[in-house]
Length: 369
Image (cartoon, rainbow, N blue to C red):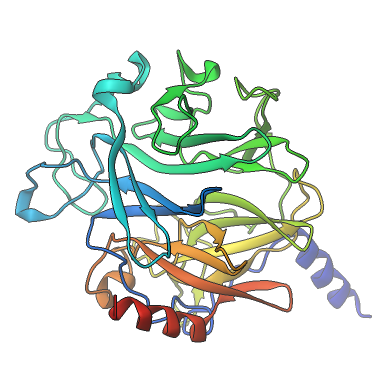
């Protein structure tokens, strides 16, 4: 082997390939996928409960709020956590607002952060006077603990927290765990939770952090530390962390924007100061034998389906959530954006990807219901 080839192999083992396979129809969210119902929602999260019902939550806009030009958003504030339930993934029933800032939040969660007059969001939305929006809630049933929990974050640099159902039911009421009664348990956004097959529970957070929890779920049992990963070089902004398991290996899902290059190709190496044109919001996956890593090279799994979670249905089939992000290319071909959707998945040669045939069958059933 030549010295050049040896050096190339060495670099390949250190860094993930940043090429974004834009235009690959086998990896894109299938065109038949559409909203399950007409409610404004981002960061869709779905799980199957022990009672045989599916439960959904996500980032919502404040109910009854008057928006300029009728354009809904949640960049500045909303009212809390909403929940939906379904027996078949086709028909969904609203369970209403199950946790609200006004009724259930601790003082640090209620406080918010003032915004300068005239501020606008990254999409140009006119903002109000304060940041206090709950983002990216996830609802989990922890089998080993027999408890329903929710993790979520608050915008404006306020941080993330974990709630536990006092009733043992998915609709709550929910209470702060001890570790975040007085302050955020994690100082950044996009907190997620993972229960391993041995019953140990971990919190994962934005910017590649992880911490094991105490057995009683009252707090973290260790400081948050960085996951060992095979990064891009240089590492761009990545969000929407989620961890699951398949064939006894840990599967780390994250979301990254692709951006166009001058030569007509696309890359995940985004320079936030220079790259103002975002293209697609993609899910990338990496695999590891150990929960802390090292995780192998990332591969693009679901194009345009970012900030998702995966879940198994009653038959053991894999699914991903999606929300039809309005930014980038997605906003040009989705008639409705920021709505809840789900995508059937399959594993091909050990890699996760959309299942076009199952998507066609499922959404054909949705039309008839």
